[in-house]
Length: 237
View 1 (tube, rainbow, N blue to C red):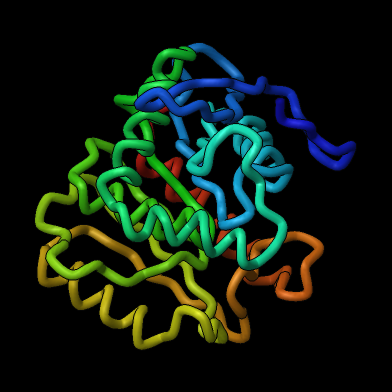
View 2 (cartoon, rainbow, N blue to C red):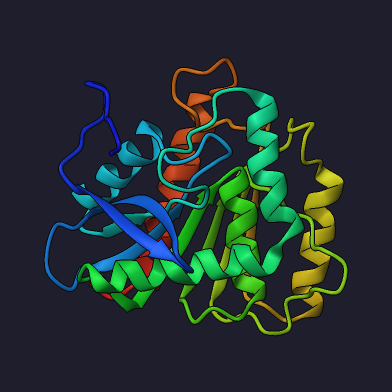
């Protein structure tokens, strides 16, 4: 089971679920029946206290949140080599990534979430997964990334994308460059996908991660403010 530290404000519940026979453990919280849904996707650490805290922040604003598990129950890597192994396996198998995303959305529905009034959002690796879901044609109202991977795999494009995109990126990010950011903008424009792309000056990769040396309070607060406004604009309450 997920073990939440005292720093995590956990008012929701752990949800064990299966996708194609494999076991996963997500986290679901909802302030009210039929609340709009945010499908939340974790970074390369796996589902941790960080996503739980973000989920409860959203629940306080009136949103249901299902924080998905894309690695598997009990798989919460702490070493960089292990993080690269688990994310790399999904980058190499995009069909499996899509299957896990659809499985998470189905699990949210099973737990009472309204998936017809939903967006998905993700951090770092989770942001890359958000864009994979968008390219797959997932029937969601919006797709949001915080300092996420922005590249498009060979053979993919945004021609099937439904809903609008909000991309928030640190212009001091050396892992995902401004060149990557510009390329994505060109692809979205070519596909005529409704989108908004914002950069934050001086913000490095992972600028929203509380307590880390990369955390930038101004960029975190500004991006969160835009995110919550996007939710209010996009979802029906």
